[in-house]
Image 1 (tube, rainbow, N blue to C red):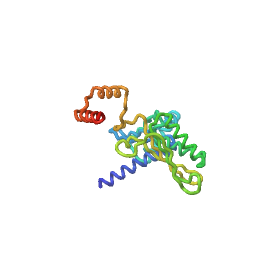
Image 2 (image 1 turned 90 degrees about the horizontal axis):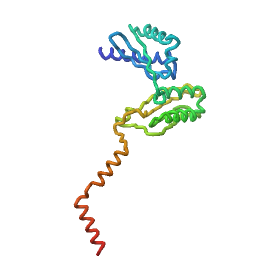
Image 3 (image 1 turned 45 degrees about the vertical axis):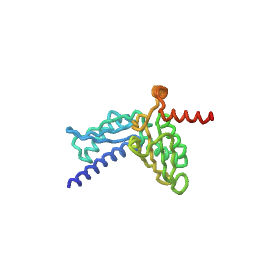
Image 4 (image 1 turned 90 degrees about the vertical axis):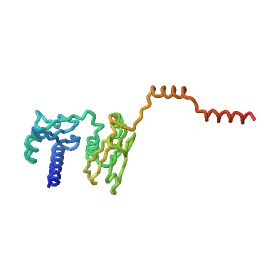
Length: 229
C-alpha cells in the first residue's frame, strides 16, 4: 500500500513539472523543483528568462498558481523564480536552444547550429562539452552525430558533476533527439591536481636536498672503475 502511494506521489510530482514546462514553453525553463513545507508547497522554477516567466505584473505566475491549484489540488502552492546567471553552463537550456534552432532553420543546417552552440559554451569557460544529435540528419536515414571538445568525465564519481540533459526537435523530416553534456568550470573535481609555481619550487628544493641511497653511490663507483680499466 505504501509503495502505491509513493508511486502515485512521484507521478503527480512529475506531471506538475511537465505541465509547468509545457505551459511556459520550450527554452525558458531549466529545472522545476518542488519543496514541501508546513505552510504549503514551494515550486521553484530555474530559468534564464525570469521576465518572460513572471509576465507583466506577475500575470504568468498567477496563472500557473491557479492551474496547479485546480488541476493537481494543491492547497497552498507558492511559485518562486531562481534565475540562472550563466545559461551556457546549463545543459537543459542549451539543449532546448539547439532544438529550437533545428526547428527554425531545419535539419540541413544542423552542423552550423551544433558548432555555434559548442563554441558559445567553450567561450563562456566550460571545461568540456559534448553534443549528440540523433535523427534524419540530413538524409532520409537516421544517423547519429557527435560534437565534442575539451575535458569531460564519463565514469567514476567525477562524472556526477557533469550536467546532462536532453531535448527533442520536431522537424519536417522527423524527430531529432538532442543530448548535451557540460562540465562547468565551477564543478569540483576530487581527482584534479593543480600544479602551481609554489609546488614546483618545493619539489625542486626537495630534490636538491635529497641524499642518494648508498646502493646507488656504490653502483656509480663500480661503473667508474670499470671505465678506467
